[in-house]
Image 1 (cartoon, one colour):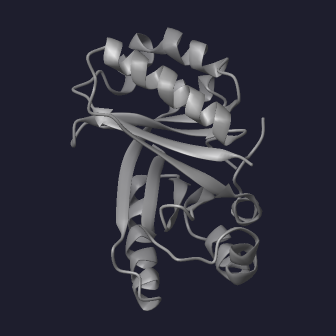
Image 2: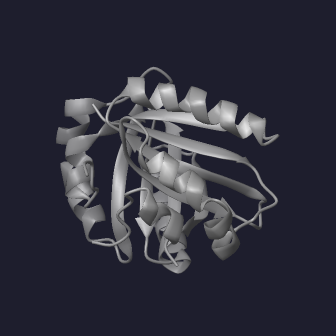
Length: 102
Length: 102
Protein backbone atom coordinates (compact mmCIF):
# COMPACT_ATOMS: atom_id res chain seq x y z
CA UNK A 1 0.00 0.00 0.00
CA UNK A 2 1.28 3.46 -0.93
CA UNK A 3 2.62 5.61 1.90
CA UNK A 4 2.63 9.39 2.10
CA UNK A 5 5.41 11.27 3.88
CA UNK A 6 5.39 14.93 4.96
CA UNK A 7 8.76 16.55 5.75
CA UNK A 8 9.09 20.06 7.21
CA UNK A 9 12.17 21.80 8.60
CA UNK A 10 13.41 25.35 9.27
CA UNK A 11 14.89 27.11 6.24
CA UNK A 12 16.11 30.60 5.50
CA UNK A 13 16.22 29.73 1.81
CA UNK A 14 17.03 29.61 -1.00
CA UNK A 15 13.40 29.53 -2.14
CA UNK A 16 11.69 29.63 -5.53
CA UNK A 17 13.89 30.07 -8.59
CA UNK A 18 17.05 30.20 -6.45
CA UNK A 19 16.13 26.86 -4.86
CA UNK A 20 15.57 25.44 -8.32
CA UNK A 21 19.20 26.21 -9.19
CA UNK A 22 20.63 25.21 -5.82
CA UNK A 23 18.81 21.86 -5.57
CA UNK A 24 18.58 20.64 -9.17
CA UNK A 25 21.22 17.93 -8.59
CA UNK A 26 19.51 16.84 -5.38
CA UNK A 27 16.15 16.66 -7.17
CA UNK A 28 17.70 14.49 -9.89
CA UNK A 29 19.11 12.19 -7.21
CA UNK A 30 15.78 11.97 -5.40
CA UNK A 31 14.04 11.14 -8.70
CA UNK A 32 15.95 7.82 -8.66
CA UNK A 33 15.12 7.01 -5.02
CA UNK A 34 14.00 3.41 -4.56
CA UNK A 35 10.22 3.20 -4.19
CA UNK A 36 9.53 6.89 -4.85
CA UNK A 37 6.43 7.59 -6.95
CA UNK A 38 6.59 11.39 -6.67
CA UNK A 39 7.74 14.28 -4.51
CA UNK A 40 6.20 17.76 -4.30
CA UNK A 41 8.77 20.32 -3.09
CA UNK A 42 7.22 22.69 -0.54
CA UNK A 43 8.35 25.99 0.95
CA UNK A 44 7.01 28.87 3.00
CA UNK A 45 9.39 31.83 3.06
CA UNK A 46 7.01 33.63 5.44
CA UNK A 47 7.23 30.92 8.11
CA UNK A 48 10.88 30.20 7.17
CA UNK A 49 10.29 26.52 6.51
CA UNK A 50 10.76 24.15 3.62
CA UNK A 51 10.08 20.47 3.05
CA UNK A 52 8.43 17.99 0.78
CA UNK A 53 5.47 15.69 0.39
CA UNK A 54 6.37 12.25 -0.96
CA UNK A 55 4.39 9.30 -2.20
CA UNK A 56 6.19 5.96 -1.81
CA UNK A 57 5.06 2.57 -3.06
CA UNK A 58 5.15 1.11 0.47
CA UNK A 59 5.98 1.89 4.08
CA UNK A 60 9.38 0.18 3.96
CA UNK A 61 10.67 2.41 1.16
CA UNK A 62 9.24 5.49 2.90
CA UNK A 63 10.98 4.63 6.17
CA UNK A 64 14.28 3.95 4.38
CA UNK A 65 14.00 7.41 2.86
CA UNK A 66 13.23 9.04 6.23
CA UNK A 67 16.53 7.69 7.55
CA UNK A 68 18.49 8.69 4.45
CA UNK A 69 16.99 12.18 4.13
CA UNK A 70 17.23 12.92 7.87
CA UNK A 71 20.94 12.12 7.73
CA UNK A 72 21.37 14.23 4.58
CA UNK A 73 19.59 17.22 6.14
CA UNK A 74 21.72 16.82 9.28
CA UNK A 75 24.81 17.02 7.05
CA UNK A 76 23.45 20.43 5.91
CA UNK A 77 23.12 21.43 9.59
CA UNK A 78 19.34 20.94 9.64
CA UNK A 79 18.20 18.96 12.66
CA UNK A 80 14.75 20.26 13.71
CA UNK A 81 13.02 17.97 11.25
CA UNK A 82 9.38 16.91 11.33
CA UNK A 83 8.69 13.73 9.32
CA UNK A 84 5.14 12.36 9.40
CA UNK A 85 4.06 9.16 7.67
CA UNK A 86 0.51 8.22 6.63
CA UNK A 87 -1.27 5.32 5.02
CA UNK A 88 -3.06 6.33 1.82
CA UNK A 89 -6.71 5.58 1.20
CA UNK A 90 -6.19 4.80 -2.46
CA UNK A 91 -9.83 4.39 -3.54
CA UNK A 92 -10.91 7.76 -2.13
CA UNK A 93 -7.76 9.42 -3.50
CA UNK A 94 -8.46 8.13 -7.00
CA UNK A 95 -11.94 9.69 -6.87
CA UNK A 96 -10.21 13.00 -6.14
CA UNK A 97 -7.85 12.88 -9.16
CA UNK A 98 -4.73 11.80 -7.25
CA UNK A 99 -2.01 10.08 -9.27
CA UNK A 100 -0.73 7.09 -7.28
CA UNK A 101 1.66 5.55 -9.77
CA UNK A 102 4.14 6.74 -12.38
CA UNK B 1 1.30 29.22 -8.44
CA UNK B 2 0.05 25.88 -7.13
CA UNK B 3 -0.46 25.59 -3.40
CA UNK B 4 -0.19 22.47 -1.25
CA UNK B 5 -2.36 21.98 1.81
CA UNK B 6 -1.87 19.40 4.59
CA UNK B 7 -4.85 18.64 6.85
CA UNK B 8 -4.63 16.43 9.95
CA UNK B 9 -7.21 15.87 12.69
CA UNK B 10 -8.02 13.27 15.36
CA UNK B 11 -10.02 10.28 14.11
CA UNK B 12 -11.16 7.00 15.58
CA UNK B 13 -12.14 5.84 12.10
CA UNK B 14 -13.59 4.54 9.92
CA UNK B 15 -10.32 3.78 8.11
CA UNK B 16 -9.41 1.83 4.98
CA UNK B 17 -12.23 0.03 3.17
CA UNK B 18 -14.80 1.22 5.72
CA UNK B 19 -13.77 4.83 5.10
CA UNK B 20 -14.08 4.23 1.38
CA UNK B 21 -17.76 3.33 1.89
CA UNK B 22 -18.46 6.04 4.47
CA UNK B 23 -16.85 8.89 2.53
CA UNK B 24 -17.52 8.06 -1.12
CA UNK B 25 -20.13 10.83 -1.45
CA UNK B 26 -17.82 13.32 0.24
CA UNK B 27 -14.98 12.33 -2.09
CA UNK B 28 -17.23 12.87 -5.11
CA UNK B 29 -18.15 16.31 -3.76
CA UNK B 30 -14.50 17.23 -3.14
CA UNK B 31 -13.62 16.11 -6.69
CA UNK B 32 -15.68 19.08 -7.94
CA UNK B 33 -14.09 21.62 -5.54
CA UNK B 34 -13.13 24.84 -7.30
CA UNK B 35 -9.40 24.99 -7.94
CA UNK B 36 -8.63 21.45 -6.74
CA UNK B 37 -6.05 19.57 -8.80
CA UNK B 38 -5.91 16.49 -6.57
CA UNK B 39 -6.33 15.19 -3.03
CA UNK B 40 -4.57 12.24 -1.40
CA UNK B 41 -6.63 10.84 1.51
CA UNK B 42 -4.39 10.05 4.49
CA UNK B 43 -4.94 8.08 7.68
CA UNK B 44 -2.98 6.60 10.56
CA UNK B 45 -5.10 4.27 12.68
CA UNK B 46 -2.13 3.81 15.03
CA UNK B 47 -1.91 7.51 15.89
CA UNK B 48 -5.71 7.88 15.56
CA UNK B 49 -5.52 10.64 12.99
CA UNK B 50 -6.79 11.20 9.47
CA UNK B 51 -6.52 13.99 6.94
CA UNK B 52 -5.56 14.83 3.42
CA UNK B 53 -2.93 16.40 1.23
CA UNK B 54 -4.34 18.68 -1.45
CA UNK B 55 -2.88 20.43 -4.45
CA UNK B 56 -4.75 23.61 -5.46
CA UNK B 57 -4.17 25.76 -8.51
CA UNK B 58 -3.55 28.85 -6.34
CA UNK B 59 -3.48 30.12 -2.76
CA UNK B 60 -6.93 31.73 -2.98
CA UNK B 61 -8.67 28.46 -3.85
CA UNK B 62 -6.67 26.64 -1.14
CA UNK B 63 -7.69 29.18 1.52
CA UNK B 64 -11.35 29.05 0.43
CA UNK B 65 -11.19 25.28 0.90
CA UNK B 66 -9.58 25.58 4.34
CA UNK B 67 -12.58 27.64 5.49
CA UNK B 68 -15.12 25.30 3.90
CA UNK B 69 -13.51 22.06 5.10
CA UNK B 70 -12.84 23.37 8.62
CA UNK B 71 -16.54 24.23 8.95
CA UNK B 72 -17.54 20.83 7.53
CA UNK B 73 -15.26 18.98 9.96
CA UNK B 74 -16.64 21.08 12.84
CA UNK B 75 -20.13 19.94 11.79
CA UNK B 76 -18.85 16.37 12.31
CA UNK B 77 -17.64 17.39 15.80
CA UNK B 78 -13.98 17.60 14.72
CA UNK B 79 -12.31 20.78 15.93
CA UNK B 80 -8.65 19.99 16.69
CA UNK B 81 -7.66 20.56 13.08
CA UNK B 82 -4.18 21.26 11.78
CA UNK B 83 -4.16 22.89 8.31
CA UNK B 84 -0.78 23.87 6.86
CA UNK B 85 -0.32 25.63 3.54
CA UNK B 86 2.82 25.68 1.38
CA UNK B 87 4.00 27.21 -1.84
CA UNK B 88 5.08 24.57 -4.36
CA UNK B 89 8.45 24.65 -6.09
CA UNK B 90 7.06 23.46 -9.39
CA UNK B 91 10.32 23.02 -11.33
CA UNK B 92 11.91 20.80 -8.66
CA UNK B 93 8.64 18.88 -8.21
CA UNK B 94 8.44 18.12 -11.93
CA UNK B 95 11.96 16.64 -11.80
CA UNK B 96 10.65 14.30 -9.10
CA UNK B 97 7.67 12.99 -11.11
CA UNK B 98 5.00 15.11 -9.40
CA UNK B 99 1.78 15.70 -11.35
CA UNK B 100 0.81 19.37 -10.96
CA UNK B 101 -2.19 19.54 -13.27
CA UNK B 102 -5.13 17.35 -14.22
